[in-house]
Structure formats: C-alpha cells, structure tokens
Image (tube, rainbow, N blue to C red; front, side):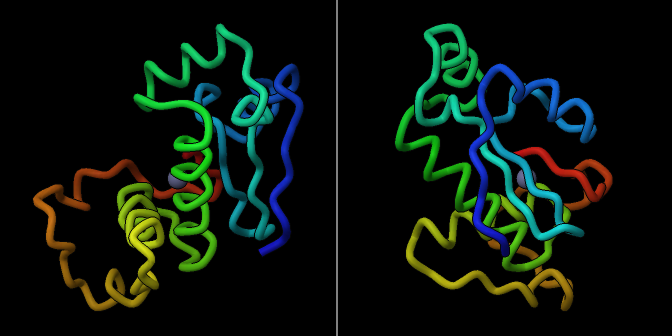
Length: 128
Ligand SMILES: [Zn+2]
C-alpha cells in the first residue's frame, strides 16, 4: 500500500462524495490505486466534526484513528471490498493477529453471528 494521506477537513466531505463514499466516514480506500485516505479531523477535529464522528462510531481521537486505520488495512492487506469482512480483518489486526485473507475465498464463516450475505454490494470506492 502507498502511505496513507491525511486530507484537510475542509476538503474531506467533497472528496469523499466524488468517490461515492459516505462523507461522515473519516477514512476510505481506493483499492485499485492501493491508496488509503484519512480525514485530518481524526487528528485535529473541530467540535462539530468530533460530535458527528462520536455519534456515528461511538468514539473519537486515538481510538477512532486506530479503528479507521486497522479497518482500512483490512481492505488493503486482503484487497477486500466487503465492509463486513474488512471490519473482521481490522478487528484481528487490533488483536495483534494476522488477518486470514483466504477465509472469505474458502467460504468459511467468521465466528460471529453477523451474516456476510447482508452486507451491501461491493464497490471499488470504499468508505470506512
Ligand atoms: Zn471499509
């Protein structure tokens, strides 16, 4: 993966919209370009933006940075377009494990009860 880039907050939502992503999300990856972009608000958020992130993700600051980066690494390391599986891989990374990218290919279900089948359709442009 290319190094991640932090984008100024003023430009973030416009940028995410052009990529077809969710503007509230503070990170997204463009898999075909092997790039991950982060909203600079993750590091220097305004009160309004922090409130928005807190309401959506239940956290702000370093915890959300950790969540965002490991989730995006899940997309990047495994070239995974599915949000649910990227979440699973991110969780494994936060637990200090190496994500098992092959898991999805062999059709083995993760141990939690959430069904991958209910995840939204895959797209190349991803939001957190
Ligand atoms: Zn994602």
